[in-house]
Figure 1 (tube, rainbow, N blue to C red):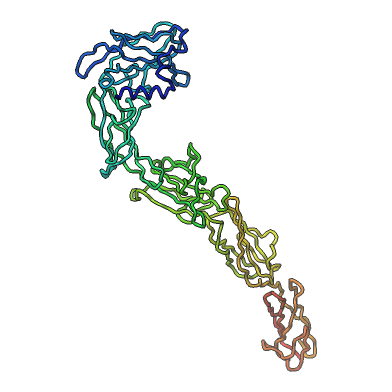
Figure 2 (tube, one colour; figure 1 turned 30 degrees about the horizontal axis):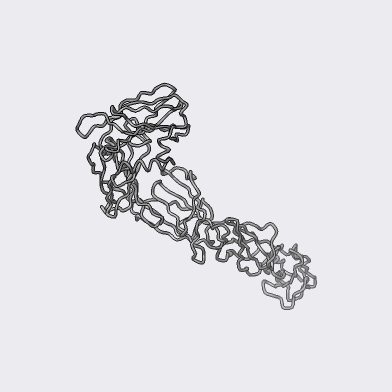
Length: 519
């Protein structure tokens, strides 16, 4: 019988035997009493006393847990008296007589289907006389659970609770999405009243399965009658990530960083629960219950891979580079993304700019995976570090002349580092400093003209001289001085000074012309 099944479950839960149930309570020396009358009212009929009903008292502790304290059976006038009770608060549970167990539903005082809505009865050494308890025939609720398309949801949960209370019991739907509270272990007998019914989607261990929003509705249950209540559970949009290492193996039970944005424009917050990690298949799922998420994936304990934040592509090294996961109207119900956690990797860096003293060289750090790690630079001259040259740009100077310049880029991400080095430039070309040369001496045939080349650097600089007559090179005149000849009479003399130095650009400077050479 349904009534005996419920009673057996209750006794098992309390860890008591039938003999223990009828034994004298531990507080037998106490003098508190709970008394009252149990009645029964058939559907549409009048209440009358019920003999042989079973009444139980449970003492509540400070945390709200209960412990069996005593029991009694009603007499021919429906009266009961629970004696020997210690001072405190009690829950009182009333079960119909065995003969009426298939007709009437049990309840907790006062008119509650479960202990969650029971009224505490205070005992302080005197008799607590309770209002009459009137048992009524059980009612039930049936219905079907479907998704928004009308497809039935098998193994969905349907929970019932007395409206206004926090606790109740539930049943599962069958293969066609139907439920019937009479099929549940704890929902077989529902006392008449107002109930809140909540439907939940089927439980699944697989993150690939659909997710449904809960649906809550109200229903009124009459004695000895059934109520029909169908529930529609909307499907929730999800994003499922599959995380693998570079070899394609799933990264299982690995830590996941999750940030939650509850409303548009709000801050991304840490969740108030954990630990958060991938499942045994390396999967992780977020659901459209908040406005947006940011997700960072880490290698499992001992893994050599680097972490990355989801950015819709190769991944970002830090949260600041993460792409928020949102739920646009046109997005499919389920989106799937693969995340590969590999070693910190990059294409080789490169250098732009002319390898000439005074020019600026710029380092292109290459493309890193995951993207945007912390980068450090070291410029090299013929493979040796240039002191102080640790930025993304290098201004070349004459001290670099003759050296091939390269740059080493070191990435730091998730505690791992990697250094890659660019190809070298051509040897740097230095730039000579120079002055305009000057001719000394009289412009007269037979006299000697001399050149003062001015300051050239960086020293040493090799200087070559070329003398000119009215702008034309004088053959053989290659010294730092020139003796004027008859052929020069009436002409203007000029000298060019050419400076050369290894790894430097050749520079030629010309003096001003002299006056016309006289006799």
